[in-house]
Image (cartoon, rainbow over all chains, first blue to last red; front, side, top):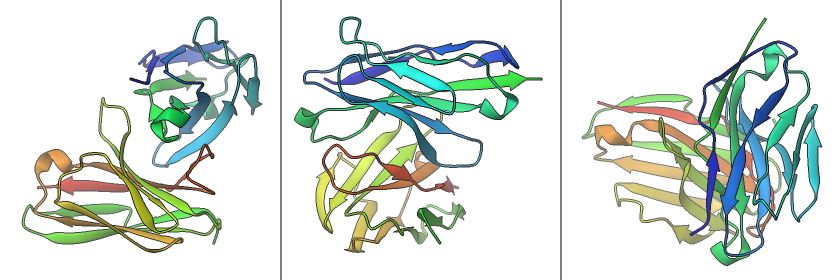
Length: 113
Length: 113
């Protein structure tokens, strides 16, 4: 079945460090890929998305490129801030599964001053 | 008020109680969702409503009963819950059921004693 695998963390970085959170997927169709972020005490917010191979999603300094050849959608940011501390979820949706969002387990990120 | 709101934000209930969770979206969307978020587990899709019609029920126990009176409101009625049902319950909405970005509410933190 369709699934998403992401590093679980927690990931602890110093402010201004480079961030990579790995995400790989398995899908029978052609998925759309998403990164959602959940700040403490809040619901999930869409961070970025990509709907076809080689698309790059970007928002708030975060980027992720849809790599069909490696079935990956890794999240990157060049310089993290304390305010980026949150849980990050990779997700996919596929037409064959009725476009339901299928989430990874989430990666907790803590950025220290 | 904009976005997706959920009430109450926190709920403590005994196993014999009956309570309801409420979700309201002010985005003009036509699809609404209930998710369960438990510690150390991926988000679990529970129910999907599209144009007020339930289109998906992911083998959720009957002690959870959804209701969607209109496209803007979604309820989750709870009765005779178990302690393992303690979790964060998230509501989301999207413009249509098919392949659209989902917007999440802040969630209701439920504790079953």
